[in-house]
Amino acid sequence: MSKSITIVGAGLAGLVLARVLHVHGIASTIYEGEPAPTFRIQGGMLDIHDFNGQVALRECKLFEEFRSIINMGAEAMRLLGPEGNLIGEIPDDGELGNPEVLRGDLRRILIDSLPAGTIQWDRRVASVSAIGNGTHSITFTDGSSVHADVLIGADGAWSRVRSYLAGTSPQYLGTVWVETFLQDVDERHQRSAELVGGGAMLAMEPGQGIFGHREAKNIHTYVVLKKSLEWIESVDFSDRKSALALVAEQLREAWAPELLELVTEGDTAPVARPIWGLPLGHKWNRIPGVMLIGDAAHLTPPDGDGANWALFDGAELGKALVAASGDVEAAFAAFAEQMLPRSATSSVEGYQSFEQTFGYNAPLNLQKMMDSAAAGNPPR
Image (tube, rainbow, N blue to C red; front, side):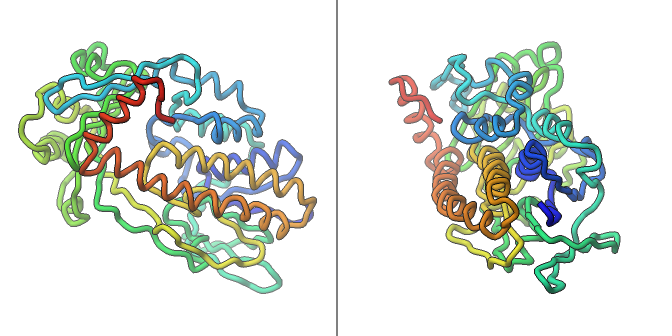
């Protein structure tokens, strides 16, 4: 391909795109705002689905590397009441239909699969503008800039490329997840280790709850709360003990001490994760030479599918560019024809799933999920 391919964002979507292009002998450059791949913890566990995420990893020729990072047994799920009583349990069936991996491990194998220099670290995008003749200028926060013939925005929720296309900004959905880690739990937090088990544990009341996930020797705890942005900004999350105690106090009475310990005994300072999403039906302008993928294109609240569709987007766009033999607009049109209706449907499903799992009717919805699983219809 004679035109240079520029990708903004070294998340899962951008990395898969670059990898699929590389597999087919096409070079690309990724500009990433973070200074290094280990700059921060890259989220928690991801269940990689066999119908989208795993398909993408096969296109990357990285399926065996993916299998090497699977957390065996982590597909198990336990549902508890706020008193700590076991309501239902879905065992890990061992079939690896939706195996769990750490996002950081998955990102690492994708980064390692690219030629040196493909990713330009510490290049945070400030703005994107047109400079004529179908070329686009990317200006970075350090004042430098580059020109791009082909520009793909894989830059997540607050995409600068989406802004260039006059796309809609995300909206706060009224829910915050506050996360902390319990470390070395088999030795230091044995009661919590037994409570969570080898996979995930969810205890919900209407509009609030505690979600724990086993990650190697640690437990990743999330507290789900319906709170305003003003409340989030008022909390000093750097004061670990006080902040964790305050977060626990937001839960209604009658929560079992062993559940609250997943919060109050956290070994790391809590981090607030406000939940944002793009409005259903949102659109952006099509400008020749520019496309969006992943959360930049279709950010929804976390429902287990976002990372999978990001992986799939990257692979499908890469395949389209390879097949088009240099006709970028034909590739973009073919990709958008499939991606836009698919993401519209998955976004509706994502909002519904998030509300069913973490909304005001969550306990009843989760009980139905467990009953369905017991009847031989496990959730995807």
